[in-house]
Image (cartoon, protein in one colour):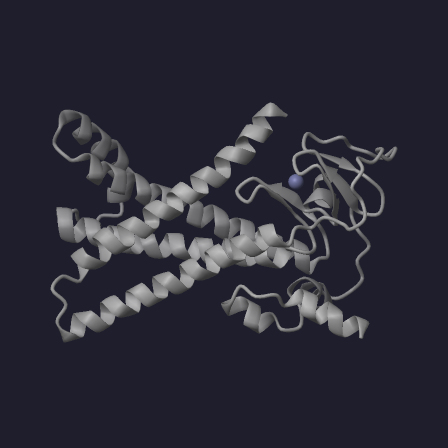
Length: 269
Ligand SMILES: [Zn+2]
């Protein structure tokens, strides 16, 4: 349990460190080096790259904040509840009845809990699933975009050719060796490391996002899947997606705004 609590503190710190590094690298190194002394043609492309980067970053961070701001806890349940007989007593949660969980890390009752996300330090459930999925998509985009710019920067600044596909495989071991031999600077090694960080986070987020969308479409949660519990969800996948993404889902794709709550309000009226 202590390990999980530690992870819950380290993961957001790692996220913020990686975000800050990405911002600094983008504005202090990548854009000034790849588009130097901007004449008219380069100025527009550097402005375009900055706009795309800021748009992706805004959505990634916006959805991150929304995930934390609208947690999946159920109302009116503050006291620590007693476990149901079916409690699987997992490491980080107790299963209660009616699809509710008590998260040991959040210390809250979570409605339709999916999983505990260590990067946001929050549980993901029905209420914040939409923001979480958009957060995954945009984080993946930011990482892949930064990876492309990072490769361009290394090509321009250090004349590293990425024409051979094997370059990427040998880049980290060779760079580490060269760094300890004193041939390359610490900054170059850090850049190479960041390439792998972006690739790793980008791929993991993309895969995770696909899995979550499939689960949502089937009306299932990660918790249910882990318990091997098949829910008899007869509603079509469109209805399941609409339940999570709301009626104004197109707006939600491009901006980190509420689309679900407004939809629910209309239902009650
Ligand atoms: Zn939790």
